[in-house]
Length: 437
Figure 1 (cartoon, rainbow, N blue to C red):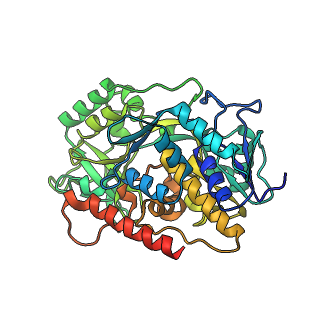
Figure 2: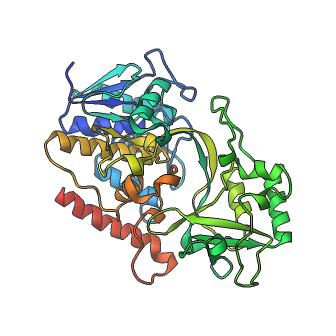
Figure 3: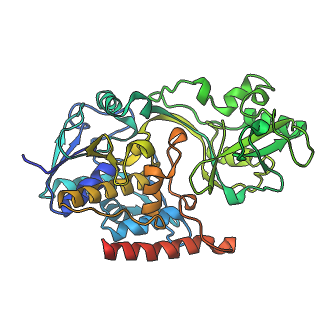
């Protein structure tokens, strides 16, 4: 068979990219190793777009929720994943949850029956020479992972994922926390510092010890490295371990007392616009509800709103802000695009969304034209911008779509109205982009 483009990986991103290209009239070879003698430790079937964890695509509220807005934008762009999600929906309140078997079967049938798609059950261990999209996800096979590492540089490919929580800046109480770099070593005050007295620290330390944790799956086999040790594991090593590690207070002068606090939690800016801040050194295996409860014990974070909660698990993703251009092409080999979780997005819908955009960018290129990126005011554009340049490359970590990725609303606004302002602006921006594109 002759084909115009090769897509490697039949998960959510690869399936969506294949659909977009095929619908645009291009012949697609879709390679999926499951069903060809190989599998992964997480998958149970050889169905395309298999959901390996939850069956939820999260909120479907397009007025007040960033992922719901992303759903709406993908529907407007003829997303196969959203079409089949809607067709196989099960009751879940305002969330979009699906019958996982019916959903996967629906996606598989749609792609298998498309005249422009050939599904090949094979493992691919090398990067293709011609136009291609790599959408192999967080469990990329070792051979291909090695080839990606060789093409990008070994230090550009992560094999585990040590995630610290990220907080929306406008939910931090700056009457308690303050801006300062340790010892004032830089002219700019680069960190937000949250002080603790001894009683607060001891209560927080005990909460970390007592908090309910998740456990590794057997296949994850994630080692603890000094640079990514979970905060609760450090706490287990002694009551003062955190005060000599990520919570050390030295060089930080609390403006309310003029002295160093007993302990301090630091937050570092996580995106270019300064709307998101990372809690430094707080990667964790605490369950999500426990993270919210315990981390809101930190002075200044009592009302914290989290854009992302922490975790530590096996993953494979590239340092996309450094390696990819604005259309998801590998800068060193522009014939190859990346899509899905391997780019460093997090979540079913986000993976499919990046697959959708990779497919559309590739289709435009095959047609001899350039498709402009969606505006950053849209959910698609905000997520894409984060992956391809909005995040700090050195500290890049997987991220779900959230309003912290969007350009801030200009002017004074009531907090209760802000989400609807984001979504109204996004709808206008998407409509203008669709008309121009």
